[in-house]
Length: 160
Image (cartoon, one colour):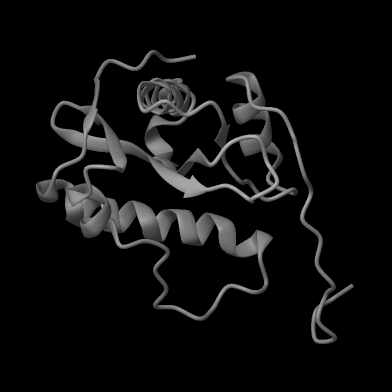
């Protein structure tokens, strides 16, 4: 495994053009796993708002001034019947293909877990498509465990 020789830092507005590219990379990667995604152009996040939000942690991995990865941590309201009011939700995980296999995602997750704990969250969650085995293995490697499986009824137009 190649070693990551860069930095993990908070994202800034100057990073926005690259973050928007990363978002499209995530959408492209997830499209084969989700037939319900809308047609392009598609956007998941309001990245500018997230970068500016003091209650959200958007971080990037950088090598020699080039952004190579990203992730975020946000607060989400928990269901009323759980033992916590809010939890940290991690998302926007992206590593540029040329930099995969260097442990960047694990470093990003570690940083976001640290941020989550510093904010007082006792629960940290993320979502991943069930068929995205490499992502599941990566998250299990850093300590996440499967919790729930969301199921859906395929539409008649989908191949079964």
